[in-house]
Picture (tube, rainbow, N blue to C red):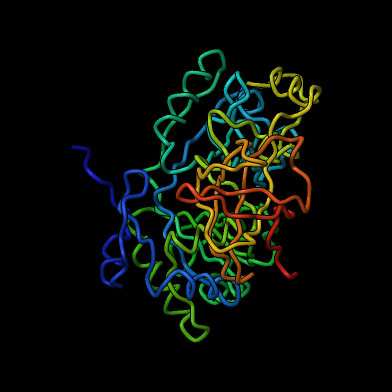
Length: 365
């Protein structure tokens, strides 16, 4: 029997009477006060997430830049020191190993943040690809607790307990500083569609920082947020989740992430297949769906047109912000037409949905 893992903040979650679930082998809070309340808290105020289950991998060496360039689909050569890049990382067949954040310290040191359920697989893949490069690769995941403060009031709240000028950290930038005297890596990133920060500290400081942020933000109603609201928030903002919008059998082009695939780069793993996909028409496309008839389109439900299967739901739920049932679906490109009506098969029953733009929510709009 595989032993479930717990983050350094586990005792904080149990003290708050969070509902805990198994998420990729981690015992994690899915909700505290309730998914909808937590969702609205992040959209309107700020919420605090424990994301210490995420993985961190250090890449160092004289060929670190060349190695990262080969590893990811995005262009790391244009990344400045102190900046962050989002990118898929592909197999030779164009399928996705994972999507990750690339932090650049300098051209000889990069810090990769990968998805929790993929850490071991990603690390093995990266180590295997590193054999031909003068680089060292180290899984440093156990050296960090990671907290995410997300929402429109995040900067004002966090600024009260740090001397670091947070306004100087631009979107997808990072710096080192102290928060409440705790040495921290602070990045202006997140997975909610809102402004916010992700903070990396040594595990022994995780609980202290968690309590301090909640205490500091209490006047504004800041509250802890579970994985349930994390999923509805990222889903509304069309941020992909590995195993849903991305996977070994789904290319980043099919997932609508072409902006992060730089085919003009000389070489990277999967380039030839992705280039052929682009030139010969991408076979499938990710679309937004609004349920017309009653029902929620859950992940992997079949999608049909005139009784013929055309794809499947990647993610779907009730949208607290839009107050309606919506979904993302991967379907045949030739049928991905705005306004078209298709069927979601829910418990063997065809339920109608309309194809709509897939970016359901954008900050400030």
